Amino acid sequence: MNLSQLCIVPTPIGNLEDITLRAIRVLKECDLIIAEDTRVTRNLLNHLGIQKKVISFHTNNEHAQLNEMIRIIQQSTLVALVSDAGTPGISDPGFLLIRACVEHGISLECLPGPTAFVPALVASGIPSDRFYFEGFLPHKKGRQTRLEYIAAMDCTVVLYESPYRLLKTLEQLATHVGGNRKICVSKEISKMFEFHFRGTIQQALEHFNSVAIKGEFVLIISKEVLADIPTDNV
Image (cartoon, rainbow, N blue to C red):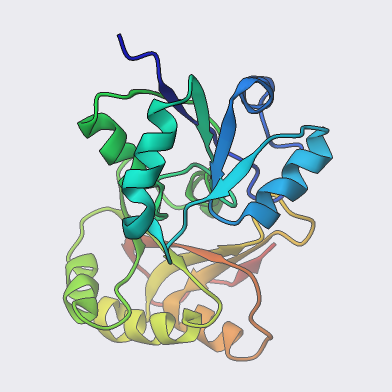
C-alpha cells in the first residue's frame, strides 16, 4: 500500500498573515517542501518559525527533475508543494508535478487558500457570475488567436500579466477587444500598496503609460462595452 502523499499548500500572495492554520500545520508536519524559489519559501518559513528541508522545482528545471521529484515523494510519507505566492498549479509549473502524481497513483490533497485572481475579480465590480480564466497570454506564437478568442467571449475574462508586458497587452486588447471595453487592472493584491484601476481599456492604457509600472497584474475584462465611464482608482 502506497502511503505517500503530496499536499498542495497555498501560500500568501502578499500579506504573510494570509495563510491558514491548517497550511501551517502541514508545513510543520511534512517530511520536506517542494518550492519554486527556495529563498522565497525560506522567508515564509522563517516568518512562521518553521525549519524544514526545501527543494526547488521551477520553470527552468521542471521536465528534467520530474522523475526525481516523483521518486522523492514515493520515498516520503508527506510532501508539501508550494509556489512563491498563491495556489500551486495556477499558472505555474506545479501543475506538471500534480499531474505526474495522479499518473503514479500518489495520493493528493489540495488545501484551500490564496490565489490572486479571486480577490481581483471580486473587487473589480465587474460581474463574476460567469467568467473565463485565461491566465498568461502566449508571448508570441498563438497570441493573436487568443486575443481574438477573448474578444468573442460572452463573459468576464481574467488575465495575468507581468510589468514587462502590461502596456503591450493593453495596446493589443484595445486593438482586438476594443478600447471602450470595461476593465479593472489590479496589482499588489493584499499588500500595502494594493491598487485597482477601473475604467475602459483605453483609459487604462493612458494611465499606465504615464506611471512607473511595478508589480504583478490581474486584468479583469468585462463583456460590457461603454462609450465613456468615469475613472475610479483605489
